[in-house]
Image (cartoon, rainbow, N blue to C red):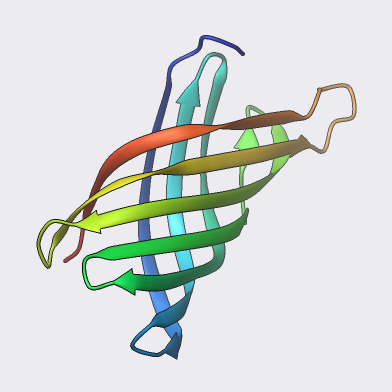
Length: 128
């Protein structure tokens, strides 16, 4: 799937497991949609985020997750999600981010090939 544009959206809610001034960890539940090439996947996922605050305005986040109910047409699909990102907090509610994200997709149907999508990203974080 080289040279394919990918659209991704995700909405998250979480529960704080660790809350320290220099770091925290959250258990999260999210709904995501992934659209690229022939793939159209929407699913619930859960996972853990670990956040480290090296300075007052910056955050480094490492995340791992797993899909709960992904499917591709009529086939069940396991999606493993991993992410490493850096956020520069321009304000208390808006941050500019850059990082690396991956989706390892494994089909239950052995006749379909597994897919490993990964790459760099940039974006904006909004906190409500």
